[in-house]
Length: 532
Image 1 (cartoon, rainbow, N blue to C red):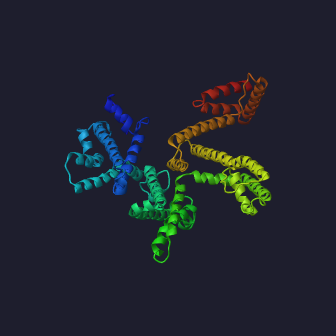
Image 2 (tube, rainbow, N blue to C red; image 1 turned 45 degrees about the vertical axis):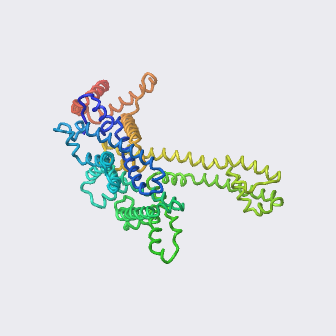
Image 3 (cartoon, rainbow, N blue to C red; image 1 turned 90 degrees about the vertical axis):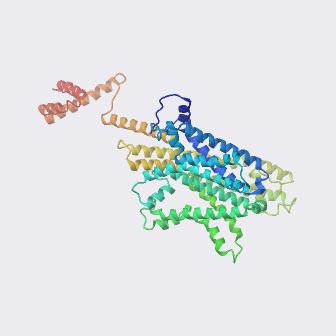
């Protein structure tokens, strides 16, 4: 529903630019994302406050951050109440501001800021202060402003579908996934990033001592989330178009690279829990970094890179071959020139290969360097050549990667043109286009631009086909002889038609189509009179 603004009051303008989702030029999406980020950040800050080693050193930072977030949340709450009469849900109703203030979203916004003001204006003891600090975690419920509408949208889009199809729509872009699929993806990406961060900082002894319990809790929660995701993906494998024609779709999914990565993300936790009493499996914790590979599912960059490598592997192989040939040749010459002067550093050719690689890569660690004049001259040449040699595969990959992105977008546009062949988009075609756009991570503006280009090209193609169907049209002024020859050919064809059908039958047929094709009929009548 589009909000109708009957006046240009400051409140109406504020609502239009900040809160109205139907106003495309406003900042509603930016405001919603900023509020969501502050909610997550404030909840994390509340959790970190429970660690005295960090909070005591940076208490002022936590205080000012809390003031900033509460101030922003307060302004948001006050302005939403003030502009409630402009909202489509409350416009035209009696006491719109009071109705909104008693709504679920308004109460959640109030609970998010109430503990701060209660502690400022009411004398509370230490225990009550701790309770109020914990109550600040209720800010997390402010995310319901985005989640609940997304859930209703998802229910509407998937009405009549099975439970398995709904779960698959949550995990994969299907065209009827809606915004809830994006929120699920962001939730999983957040836990991947959090678990990887914990694994990294867990290797720091001082940090591990402070957050030992928190690391354990986060690891258990991450394992639970990733396990549920893995089971859900295996369960919904028959809904995947790639596996629908297979007899064992579940097994087909389990064998894929992404499923193996998902399994490796949870396997170290299982092995460590089952066998840690008998074996020292602490080294498996490092393998939890395999969860980083799960991020490849949420970007098309790796898929595009794989296509590039498979398409350009011959050129890449040729450049790598030249590079390896240069390395071996240079290492052999380095061994020949430097072995007698530095037998400990240039002991053999494999050791010289190390020096050749670091020199060719222009890093030169300095642990091995020639001292003879020929060796130093060789190093200079190798360093200069290395700049160009290493630039060749990098340039190939960069140009091929850009070209592959162009090919993917052209393929998407061709898919749009095929969808427009029947003159309209049905529901299945719309879902396919939306799913492809999500897979390629195309923005709304890019999809709109490609759609307009597809429509324009399809219209041009139709016009061209229509022109070819009606024969070649020549410019009579530019080519009078050819135009006259074409006209004579048309007259001869009409004469043959008249002889075959008869004059009366031809006139009768022309009269039948007179109402719909008056212009064409006039031309044919003139030509027919001249012929007869």
